[in-house]
Figure 1 (tube, rainbow, N blue to C red):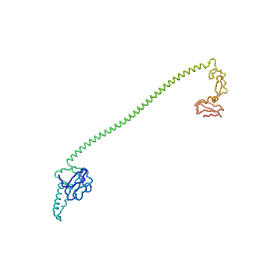
Figure 2 (cartoon, rainbow, N blue to C red):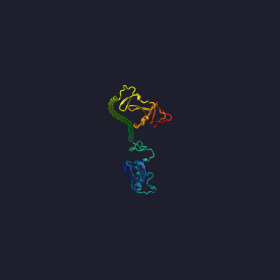
Figure 3 (cartoon, rainbow, N blue to C red):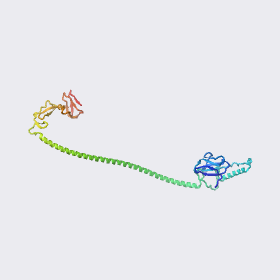
Figure 4 (cartoon, helix red, strand yellow):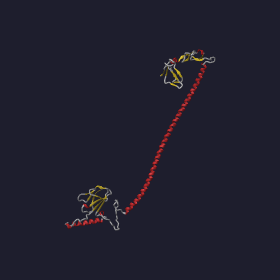
Length: 351
């Protein structure tokens, strides 16, 4: 169907020029809409030149946007009023008739329906070929309503199904998370058990090595003990033989004491023992034949000994001889049953 008062064009994203195909008297009668949205001149479109019937768009109209060019003829007054002195010419008569023709076209094509200011009574007739409603103020066809209602019902069912699926997915996700956490705990437990088993294996290995070492040591000790026992038995046999050889028989030597010259052992008469009177603090010695008393410091200062040893614990009561001093190598401990008495004028030095 040809339109005489309206021109439409859908952009493919490259629309920048649109030649006007509808008739109009002047540019003031032309309005432009982008998808039924009124766009003023200078805001997205402009005229090309002063006489060219072409619209220019900058930037290019977006893909899918419908450009609608609408002519609205002035109906307030005819273009040429002859009674007021307008020239009665062919051109003026034609323009007056064209004005009425344009108004009739616009009324026929409902180009001016947007400007109605009263209710529309169709007297039982239908409004047909209604476009798809996209704005809240658009009329909607029964087909679109049914489709939207069915779509809403379907969408509702889909939303319910999606919700149920989401709940199932959430439960599955939580279950998977719980399984993952359990797997992590099991892995940590397995790792701990592995470490424990490894430590037990290492301990068992160390114990086995220690047992083997102890067995080897016991074997060596046994061999050593056997060798020592054999040696001790041999030495005991030798000592017994020597004692039998060198210890003099005590028969007939009652009241005598045993002495030695370092090689032979013999019995000496008791009356050969020197008296201890005046020899307090000295010790009994012998040259192998005769016995005599010798002072302790004589042996201690002997160049053949080199040092003197004594106990580091005193467990008996002892008094330093009056007029003497005493020296000990420290530390020295006095036991619970021991004591040291230092006479007046004497000293005990611990070094």
